[in-house]
Picture 1 (cartoon, rainbow, N blue to C red):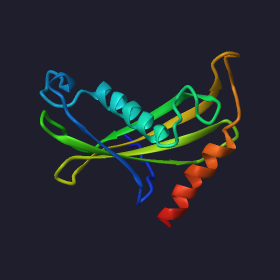
Picture 2 (cartoon, rainbow, N blue to C red):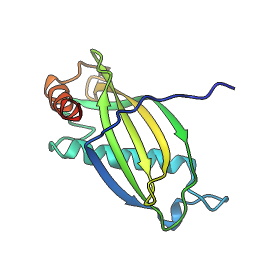
Picture 3 (tube, one colour):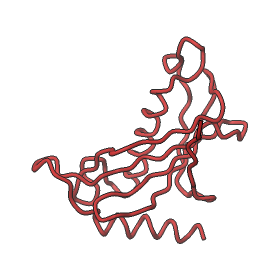
Picture 4 (cartoon, rainbow, N blue to C red):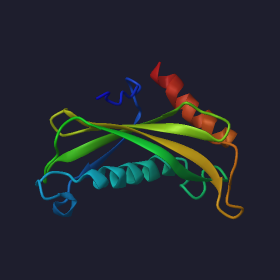
Length: 146
């Protein structure tokens, strides 16, 4: 079976830490699969919030998730603290990707993921262009990495 391969930036400048709660575990006593998506959304909200934006108002437009790819690398357990890094890239006319790297407190990468975010007008229920303002600030961060 072919495995998903994600290409994440080497240096990502945005980072948030989230401790694993007991309610985040599944029957295997490790982090449940769906919780990774919840953590990505939480991190994404903080990422946007650094510019006082949100998923409903990203420089004037909303965003909606178009797709997601998750690569699980190691287990996570209660008491672990995950460091979640986010970087933006692959900008199209109406969409962009957010890449995530989740690392535990021991420096082990436990998950890599990508969400395809589509710019969306929630009033008219249609896709719209990526705001130039967001693309400029995200690209400025990417330029600092290189």
